[in-house]
Amino acid sequence: MVTPAPRLVPVPNADTAPKRVTILGSTGSIGRNTVDLISRAPERFAVEAITGNRNVALLAEQARTLRARVAVVADPSLYGQLRDALAGSDVLAAAGPEAVAEAAARPAEWVMAAIVGAAGLKPTLGAIRRGAVVALANKECLVCAGDLMVAEVRAHNGALLPVDSEHSAIFQVFEFERAESVERVVLTASGGPFRTWTKERMAEATPEQAVAHPNWSMGAKISVDSATMMNKGLETIEAYHLFPIKKHQLDVVVHPQSVVHSMVAYADGSVLAQMGTPDMRTPIAFALAWPRRMAAPVERLDLVRVGALTFEAPDENRFPALRLARAALAAGGSAPAALNAANEIAVAAFLDRAIGFLDIAAVVEDALAQVPAYPLADLAAVHDADAEGRRAARAAVRRFIARKT
Ligand code: NAD
Ligand code: MG
Image (cartoon, rainbow, N blue to C red; front, top):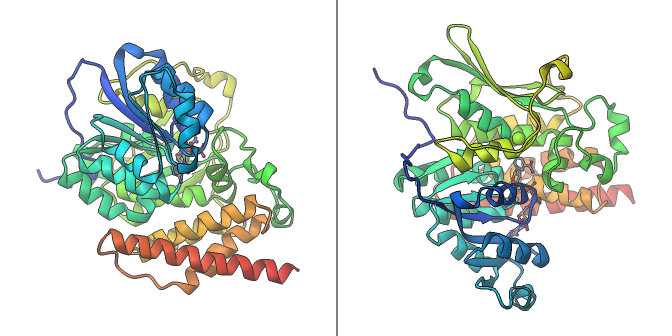
């Protein structure tokens, strides 16, 4: 029997010694949840390196608690502060983007990639290139450079484990040895804080309202992505790269309770779903302990108390970001990288109150219309596509601001 090779490349891990781990982006939402799980099971893990962008106080506190070998702050101007905060400890302090990449290259068998945005690409690739098991939260990396990343994972005999709750769910119910029997992969979406809002109301939405997610507590950028539903678009592209499926087999369904985290439908009519309360410590624990499982202190799912699970079709008229992401996936090549870059600029402009909520998708659409899609031969081409997307989006943001004033 010939089965398509899974895009995820599992490696055996029968080791019972503590797992040596590195956390890229330890000070963020995913990073803090990862630190929480590791500090509850100190005998199972040894921490090589942790990194943050600017939050020196938290980074130093985490480094001391976890007895990390190295702590890196990405902002080079904060080196002195970090060194002072770690005085008297055995933790080595370092600073700057190069030091973040070096932290990823240090010998940890397991690396959490939880830096937000395209900034995470270089360090994540560094971990992949030394064959580490990479737990991937940073979906933007896969969106920009999915084909290249998956090729690197294969070439270096590593593994990519999904951390995104939907992809963790799919991973848990995807029968890789019977991939030809998979008919559809269905990503669930909460619908975000504006699920029931009219477009007129969304036009006035503030950053505070956009980041107040009904079910999940997350970083600002991904919270805005959830509100526009760009998050589900990025996740559709992410799923395409992680699993051996075709583009047309990917569906999205809105499920406001966030209990069913995603589903895989098979040729015999079976639909396998993974469920749980919405707490990122479950998918993080799954990746941390893989190929085993570990305890996670999350609230247990009580279906009687939940009462009803409901599902509805996504509305691409009110949430055009989903349509834009699907179009970028269909176009392939540089289109997803440009989409992601334009979205990062648009979300930042919205969080700065420079543009309105509905302008986010409009800026992305405008930017994508300016940059043609072309095949991505190598990482340099990914960086070019990212730069073009950013440039076009900045120009679009300026036009939107000019139009308003
Ligand atoms: P966050 O903003 O809370 O944390 C981001 C982390 O990256 C922080 O440690 C920050 O210091 C670091 N960072 C930011 N910019 C950096 C830079 N230029 N260089 C180096 N480090 C930098 O974000 P988050 O919510 O934890 O999300 C992290 C990633 O995980 C994102 O890609 C997001 O899409 C994904 N994700 C998050 C969730 C969630 O529940 N939070 C769920 C699924 C996927
Ligand atoms: Mg998700």
